Image (tube, rainbow, N blue to C red):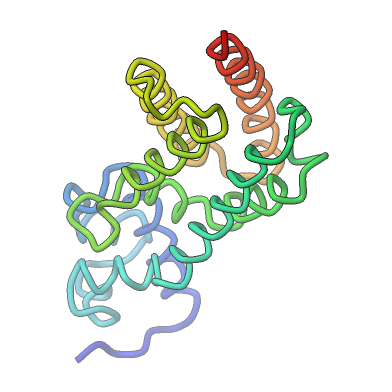
Length: 201
């Protein structure tokens, strides 16, 4: 039965596990590597959790995954009602700001959900995000019958998740994350606006 560890060690283990799950994915992560990064032993990790799945569930509780999905859906909802897409950055959009705040606060969780959840209950999350982004975009255009546009958007949104996850894995500070995401959103929003405007003709 797992024991109660001191709060500082418990937090180090959770942070190390989140980082390694985000970097390598659940399936490739090893308890020994998590323990080493946390500056403790694997036996100490097992005093806190039953197994790797139990540890993953503590790093990424269901309510956090649900919160991320809700914030992402709110962000995507903007694309259905706003016309100036390039103004939908974190400074001018409450939905963008809320989603970015989640990424800053829970960067490992967001990176896992965007692409490192194979072998977990959230394995389908990435595909569902891409499908929602694509579906909302083609619906906005009234182009559900255009397989070429759908394919291109699926590829774009898949790479979007890869890029965002890479930012969240690489950068640790709120300032760095916000700066990198701002650069990416500036590029992506302009590109999407151009693509979708051109696709109407």
